Length: 135
Image (cartoon, rainbow, N blue to C red; front, side, top):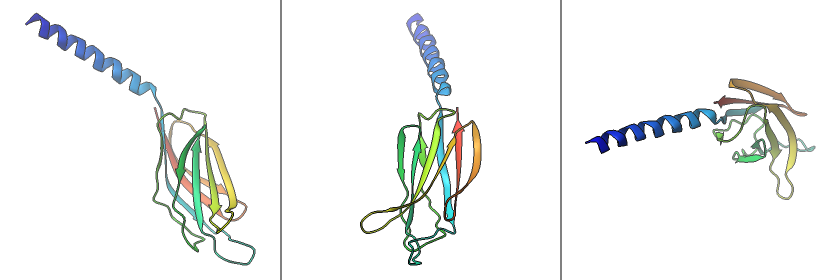
């Protein structure tokens, strides 16, 4: 019987230690992306925009592109389980083309604790997004 009691104490201690380690980590989530008034090529065509996302040196991926849309909304979410406070969150907006994609602008900011709604003014249009950092 004493063995089971000791095992319960050890299990409880391990659970407490793991919960302490988990609260010491940080995680960033980027979501709610949309853009307004994006311009396409010099010929007046609407862009086929998409967004690439980084936090620190970690590439989180990219959204799908929207054909002929200067007011896109993306449903994608990006999670960075190891992104720390004060690391740089970077979002790049691109126009998908047949040969070489056009860079429409970059948004960058240092992350801090909490949930934030951001507006980024590009050379042509604006990108809106939300991010949260949980510690």
